[in-house]
Length: 372
Ligand SMILES: Cc1ncc(COP(=O)(O)O)c(C=O)c1O
Image (cartoon, rainbow, N blue to C red):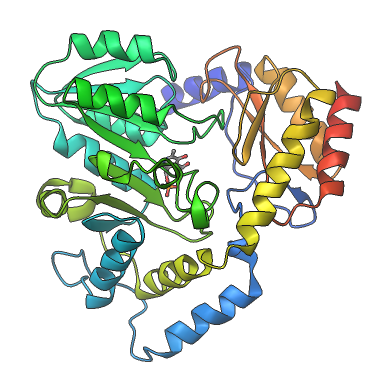
């Protein structure tokens, strides 16, 4: 077995795609984390979370069990109701992570003889959830309505269209209005992952579906708390029936220890902080600034209105050495290599934040231009 493992790793080394763990370096300028609003490092927010925790001096350090056994709290259910209300949903169910939410949702709702129709650039968690279901699976070309229509014509059983509002690697946005119209035409159920839209897009950063007024048209939405909210966990929003169904059939919900109280208190407090839109405005201003100047520095940027801005640098070796060079110039920008993205689509993934200054953005783009 050892030699099999070593051979597989040797292949990764040969392809320049070996994954290794590195410590994050606080001295670098952060253009890589998902902490878009800077919540994870916000001292005021930390103080508010401490205040919230102090209200419950007897809270346990761990949940002590799954939600269905010893790990449920009225606090968790109140929080689910509050978040559901904020997003104009009937109900919500919190999962330990976005990965768990997506795997639990897709693997449980779609049955044999049903059809899942997935955008080709879906996040791994959605792909894994689809793979775990017994349903037929079709992939449509990224954001391509004709390709989606073709797949819909051949779909059987209950049909689910699965997409993201902001794509995690390209940063571009799905044509949700048109996709929703197709879903209605073909009586399909729409599932939208808003992981990278929460805190970034919409009024008070409440997501792309909210901005488009489509919240009620969607069968299930996933909001994750590990990106712009700077903490941990996720919620699936939908009907009361969907919530009960997930409690009964989503294995990634049922068979795991629930989030600890301090995580719930953190989620509650960060959601309240979204309503103070100051950081969202700063982030949106940085996105506009970046977009207004990026083409002066390279024509290889993928079109994006979100905090994720990707610059294609083909080839693992070239892309990796580019990000190493940026690192030695003080910028934390990650290279995203194949097989995480398709071969030929390797890229530098630049994440913009509310706390980045315009000067830092200009310096980064200047350095990229110089290095190219
Ligand atoms: C689109 C999308 N969905 C889900 C997830 C998973 O969320 P989490 O990190 O909370 O497991 C990610 C994380 O990278 C993501 O980008």
